[in-house]
Image: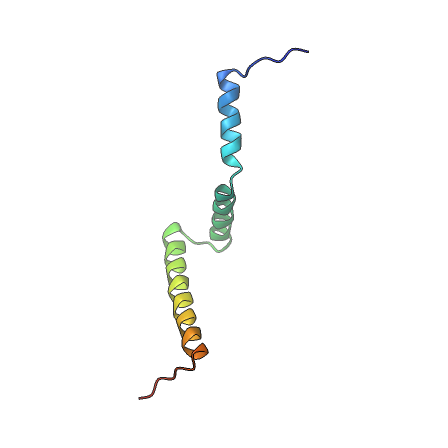
Length: 74
């Protein structure tokens, strides 16, 4: 049995396969699937994530206030 070096085409295909199996690509597929499942455009998905991010930040801030027993009085 002899071992030969990869051809340029085989080398390129190996690089593509390696790049396609990244965690980032998996996350992109999950995101795309969720967009399709919820019938969202890219613009709508970005807007929804911004709204969620703002809500998350607000509730984290609120949790910190209550954890420190800070109350707001008028």
